[in-house]
Length: 231
Image (cartoon, rainbow, N blue to C red; front, side, top):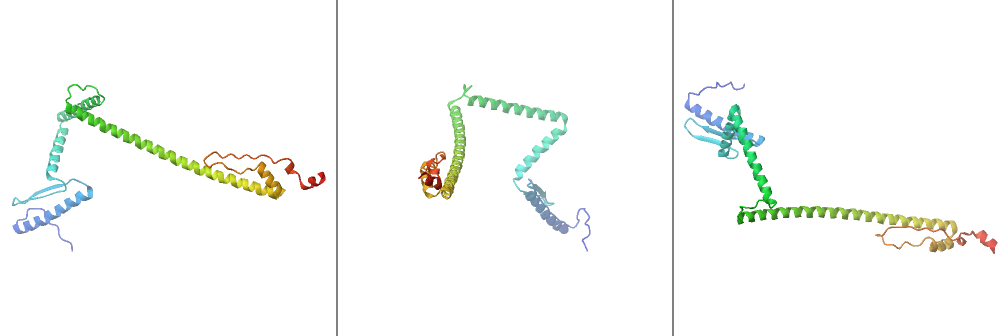
């Protein structure tokens, strides 16, 4: 059978009250730790026992949690009051205007304008900032140029491979043409036509591939029958 419900009221017996406090405190701190880990939450728990002893848990810093709580609580209280809400947004607008003015002033100084009133240390800091910015720009430019060179190199290698493949195909076509001509007219005429129309390809692979096929000489095309009649 399950345990019966415990009435939520003060425990009169001091021993039972202390045992219950110890158990419930451990369970509460365990749940707080699990909540912080599982949900990535910022958790802080503060417990004072009836004897005045402090027990606490925080997954970050208890001081920072308390400061954050006070700030958030103050902002929420201000937003609940219309007059306070107006003042809050007025302060936010003033802070943004101040930040904008500082950024504009810094930009003018970086552009070499309105440098009056600056001491040597300020000018040294501005020079260092400009040099750092210039180094960043140069590194970015070098990276882009390097990537473009690598891309062009890859394209050049691809074009070279295509050129080699085309050269192999042309040589294969030449060999097939020679074989067909030998079968049709004989080895003697094929060798004579090779000197006239099928000149060996001697260009470099890097150069453009151009195939020139001239028609065979008229006398080499005479059939054996016509040659016998002419005799």
